[in-house]
Length: 311
Image (cartoon, rainbow, N blue to C red; front, top):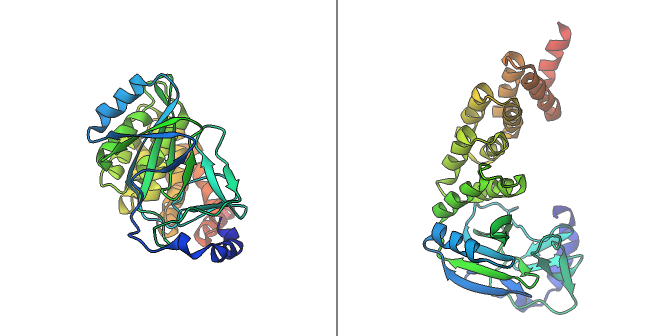
């Protein structure tokens, strides 16, 4: 998307002034939806309300809510492909677009008409809120999507049960149950739940990721949690990841933890990768550390390989 920024700037400059009218800048309370119905629901008791709606759903439908998200200029989730978002206007190949929500329909639908007037100021940074949407089919969660409030959605004729007043800590708890592999959920649902937890701007998200990295019965979930810890946990990440390399019984989780070390800032991650490559007792783990050292192109990694080759 960044590569297209210069060309798209011309599109923005050509957009009529009212589309960027000044306003409060607050994120919308619910997504803008076409080709579907948004049904507001009280979400104060998230777990009970969510499971009641799942159990009662006879046809495919969506459940969604908004929570605060980590601030990052890149945190805009909408259509796939050649799509760029500016202040609520989704532009695909230079045209205003609405994004398909249903599976297999994540492209932007373009329109020749003028964009709807937006009442918010232009946001250079990512939004403060994200929308978490769950697709329910056969009385179970089949898919989770994160959506930016900037994105207008085509719901494919489905109902979106929109929960109001959801507490972010309750959202983290709900998503952690969906990430668990104990009930046969697919990796796709578990992976999406873990990424959603990591995107929460809530104090409970990092402790929950750490709990899953240590305790989840699924090696896949433990490994994915370690990846998100590396992205999010700051000073606590290195100790947690190193502990997994030393203590997790599953070699695949150890290898995933080595990858997570490579996601840390280089001044922190490279020395730890070198230490693993030198001292870990598991040859598969040492090999993984050497692989990511090679990918790093860091001078310290080159010195390490030169030392090995000189022996």
